[in-house]
Length: 133
Image (cartoon, rainbow, N blue to C red; front, side):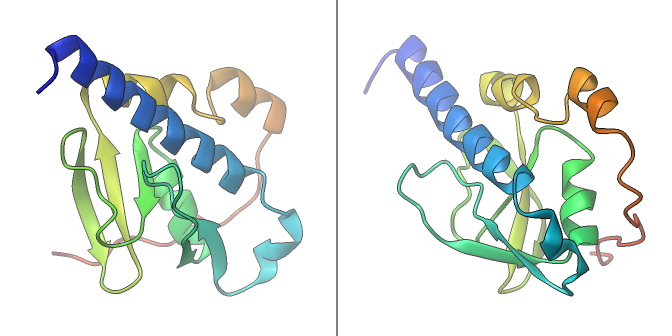
């Protein structure tokens, strides 16, 4: 068992892995936006995960509204630093980071305040809402 500082460092590193995966998803080719469903990289903390998650653009945009939320494959959640907010059975989970890990992913948000201004409005629909629990 490590010290609290070692645990926090592991959580920060896991969050950094997730932020990097989110950055990959943000750089996906724009030509895929017309597709009904788009494949995104699982934004889990496992540095060797190569699994994909299928979402519509509206679903992904719903997740991305809040910088500490990520999309992962079912079973890829990291309970020590995130909580599951919703599940689309067999497709994906929406997780929310907390603590130091949440601070890392929020700080590294590719849509942070300065990036939002430079990207401008995308004109994407924001009509998708999660099903009621």
